[in-house]
Every structure is written in C-alpha cells, then in structure tokens.
Length: 374
Ligand SMILES: [Zn+2]
Ligand SMILES: [Zn+2]
Image (cartoon, rainbow, N blue to C red):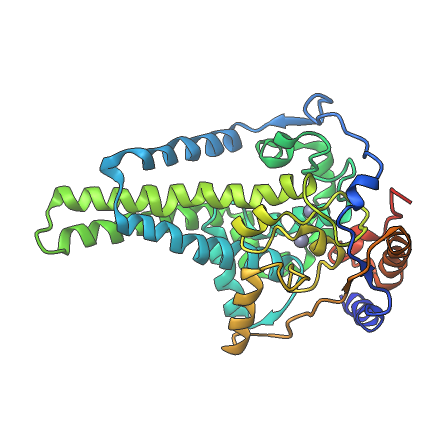
C-alpha cells in the first residue's frame, strides 16, 4: 500500500505537465471496440436463484408505490432524503470513493457509519462490492471485466448481478483485491456471516416502525392510519429508493461505458455522461474517474457538477474527513488533431509512469495496460 501511495505522489507532481487535452469528439475517431459473447451463452455464468428473486422481488414490491393508498408526502420525502443519506453518502462516498479508492481519510467510526449507510442500499457486502469494483478498474472493458457493456447493455446494467461467473469467482479473491477490507473484523462479519443482509432488513423494519408510530401519534391518529403510514414509509422510503439507487449505480456500469464524451484517452470505453452524473450525483463523470481513480472529485471541469465531492468537502470542513486526494490529471483546453495525438501519447506515458500496481488492484491498475486504440 505504501509503495502504491508513493507512486501516486510521483504522479501528482508530474500530472500538470502530462496533461490531457479535451477530446470531446475522440469517440468518433476511435476504433470500434471488440464485443464479447455473453458469459451465460459461453456457459461460464449461471443465474443464481436468490439473486434473481431479490432483484425481481424488490422491483415488483417497489411498484406498490403507484398504489394511491400507499402514497404519503412524508414517505416521498423519506425516499428523496434516503437517496442522499444512503445512495450518495453510503454508496458514492462510502463504498466507492472511500472504501474502494481511499480518496480521503477518516476515523474508523466514520468509515463504518458510511459503510452501514451503503449496506442499506442492498448492493451486497462492502468487501464484495469493493473487490468487484477494483476488478472492474483493473480489467475495464476486457473480458475479465465483471460488467462491461461490450457484452450487452442488459448484461452491464443488471444481468451480471443475477449470475455467478466462473471468471469472476476465480478473480474475486479478497486476498488480492480487498486485503484491507478483510483485515477489518467489521467487514469480515458483514460479509462472512451475511450480517449485511440483516442490517438491510433491520433498517427496512425501522422505516416501517417510524411511519407506524407517526401515524399512530399524530393528532387524530388511528391504528388504520398507523398501518397506512408505516406501509407508505416502507414502500417509498425503502423499496422505491432502493430501486432508484440501484439504477443510478447500474447506469454508471452500463451507460457511462457506452455513451458520452471523453476528456481523457483512457484504455477503456469510459465516458462522461451528464445525465448519469446528474442522477448519480457525480458518479457519471466516469471517464474522468477512470483517468484518475483515486481523486475524490469526479468532475474535472468547472461545470461538471459533482455533488458527492461537494459533500466530501463539507465533511472535510466539519473535520470528519481529511487528506482529500486532489485531481492529479488536468484537462487542458486544447482541441484539434495534433492536440488529440499528443494527448493520447501523454496519458499513456502518465498512466505507465505514474502507476504502481497495488496488490489489491486499486487505483490506476486497469489503466496500465497499453491503449487499445494505440
Ligand atoms: Zn467504469
Ligand atoms: Zn471507481
């Protein structure tokens, strides 16, 4: 880990000179990438009944939010606040930028609190999420990538989650991709004992109880109103919000590797997609993220709004987090074929010179590979 951080320090000092031009139209000039056969059709991946049942079941139950009897304004607010509390704080800031990429530092209790918020999004145990995402960075858009849309949009969006893939199974050794996670007894317990799922169920029950109590105690409250408001909080505050956050996260895996513009010539198909960035509160600036995975900010231009990063800065001003890793690459305002050619050369050199393959596959590991377009 130390060697890795030294490598990153070296990169940060050289980054301004080895900056990358803004390449809005670079995707046009790129060669069409090879497509891959579905791992299911190759008999490498098979549906897992429990995963299919949970995914389809939660979607079906979330549809209850369209039943008028289950609507309440407080339930809707619980849903919207929950997107920030659990989706942004838990997944974007906790699981992704902190646990996977170590984009900032914080105390253990803050880290575990953020991880608990992420667990309430029903996206699996933190250590598993981290290992899979580090594999994604290392093998991005190659056959080993767990969720490349070069198989298909649906595969990248959610089909891969419903399957167990032999490739993924062999790659996903926590020793290699998440050693920092399994050293922590908290994450070990969450993963190995399946506690993460119980935490999710418990928080769902808590939402019902809060709604139920509110319906009971409010002026003129009754048992019927208590059941109605409790159910509303469960459907809107938990199920609908879980599905929304799922699709925000999944869109980063699918859409931002398919459509958008590129600031950097990374060795994958990552793009910056303003729609996904807006929906996912910053995660959609995915080409920027692949170019500089450790930086806390995913928006690299002034107008690339990254709400998750702004929240990290607020947490920093509250002294809850520190050591926020700055952006180490620079988007220069240069256009034209010469700038593009030079930029491709520069980013290739930067990635190779500035990266040190860490034992857990984090950081720029995926970008060390030679550019496919070169
Ligand atoms: Zn990606
Ligand atoms: Zn990442």
